[in-house]
Image 1: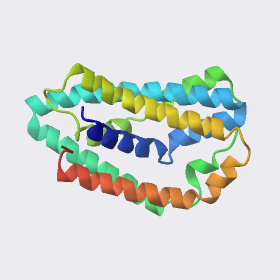
Image 2 (image 1 turned 90 degrees about the horizontal axis):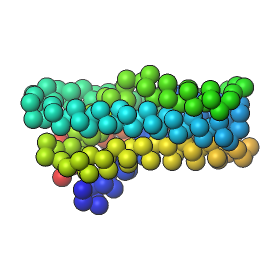
Image 3 (image 1 turned 60 degrees about the horizontal axis):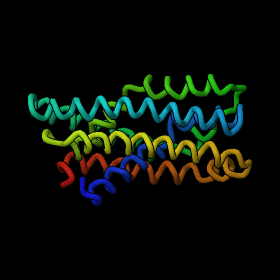
Length: 205
């Protein structure tokens, strides 16, 4: 995979990881309720769940492109519509949402379990990955290239939420984020709408 193409993939994965939602709320709750280690555990197991969905999507997309090109196109457009809906939702969001998550008493085991369940219990990740990876997957893509795509999604998702857990160990970080939540939502919304348009326009080559 060319480095410039990988940079595009990494940037889009980072945007998806950073968007406020249930995953961010999960890491916030476990970090505030149990400290840095439970927050990191939730982040890492969430990344494993994301990696599983990415793996399934990479192999599934390759098969769809070859055997059912019309169905593949329809699913891709459905994914683009979902990204656009997420973008509009983010633009309409205020200062609240995931950044207002309350602390709860937690353990490392509970955090690890919840991190995996939140990822696997969110089938919308499949739509996100279909829309995202349709720009990068080709029928003749090598095993190594597929592995790079999956590892990129896992490392970026896990890395971002580990940073969130570590950052929230310092008491000043969360109020700073909450004060700027509306800007985070607006930027995320614009980027998601841009990604939806990019998906409709065609693959990144």
